[in-house]
Length: 331
Figure (tube, rainbow, N blue to C red):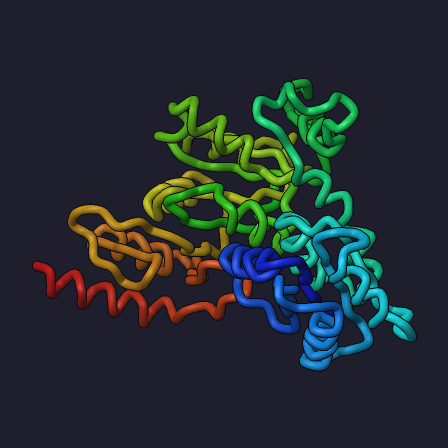
């Protein structure tokens, strides 16, 4: 696996390391190196050397630095002498770091990842209102995603094999947020995110926020349950690789019964509300939730209990047993 060093003036690298871990989970072979105000070039050179020495593979190393020509950059350049496979990318931002993490799933070369993440880092710079963006900076990927809408395609047209592909489905009270827009999207590589919710589909503000939260190149839609059932049968979505998001397991169960053919369902976040019990740090349940998840299991749906891709899945049977005990104690 390619080793990644995040390097900066001050605590920036440590902060972005923590942010990346919150979104994408713990990462092996990643180190944050900072230059403190009281330190000099020799100090950070030694820290960089120690970071590389801690990696499993010291042949493939990618350095993400804050500023081209700054001391961290210069000392990485000195360290690179004789290491032809290493690479440096400056202008480090969070989209760049997350993309670098995700790229290690499919790329084994530091230099290949370096080339790939530059455009992602640029696409991470956006404005609101969108009209403030320079015309030439409008991401081409967003236009391409808009062009994929089936609105202009006659009904009955068969695209590809005529069957929508579900690359990932998740129950998450927060729906589309950082862990989903970066971590899970990068890991599962959908070309469309579909939020399935009767409530959210009636909320213009939330729908707009979901659309804006989608990563570059991936279109986000919000549809009610009945609309999702129609989409599942629409042959115009044959080239669609969809990531589905549900607010509740009840919505997921209804969609599956309505014809959405899922084999696995990730349970990522279920917020606490009155009458529920905290089963772990991110999952709160009541009797209806437990019964719904057990019904999903009885239908052959595999429950994947984890927050981010790098987490180890929890045993769903053990978790439901613990949830039932807590609910019974509450009665």
